[in-house]
Amino acid sequence: MASAVRNWKLRLVLTIMLHLGAAANISLFTLHPSLLHAQDVQEGKASYYAKKFFGRMTASGERLHKDSMTCAHRTYPFGTLLNVYNPANGRSVIVRVTDRGPYVRGRIIDLSWRAAKELGITAQGVATVTVQKVSNIIVPYLPSDEIDLPELELETNEGSTDVTPYWQDMKKDLQESQQAPSSSKSTHSQTKTTQAKGTQSKAPTSGAESAQKTPASGK
Image (cartoon, rainbow, N blue to C red):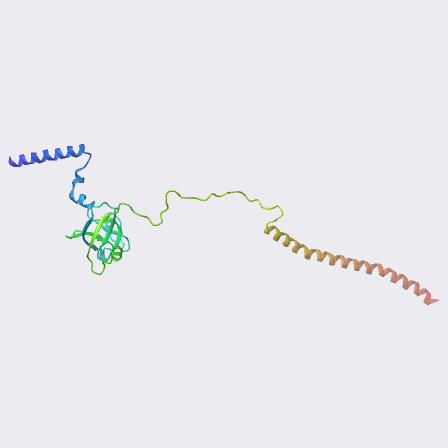
């Protein structure tokens, strides 16, 4: 009988909380202490993945790579960017949540090997760090919204009519060089033809002279 009363009271309390949460447009999960704590700056121990975990599948479905700037956190959603600061040497890195953990007491984050190297904690293995969610990422050399562009006058340049393209000059020179041997050959053939005609014209004259000389010698 007592257990039934307790169950009834528990159901009543849960029903009231659900109604109050719906009226305030919030969920019971937003009241979870771990989620509330995850929005603040966390301070605790940080460790990094051992070599045997390289290449294994993480809770988000991505494979772990030693040079990736990723981490494991218990409560932050996958893809959340976290700023991890090492107060011992003043170094800080930005990592992305891709896995769940660590589940060792006192540790708040597991880093990839590359992130741990950037923080300088690979020698000791475990170090005290502070973890905070990155809200605004400042991109180096990000241009302002208003960019002053110079005014350019765009116009077409048809060029001067007296100037001919270089390829036309080359084509003309090539044609002239091809015509030069043919013209010399034609001149040479004309010379030979003229010489031949001169020889033929002289031949009858020499015959007539010989014919005239022959009777003279007979007399």
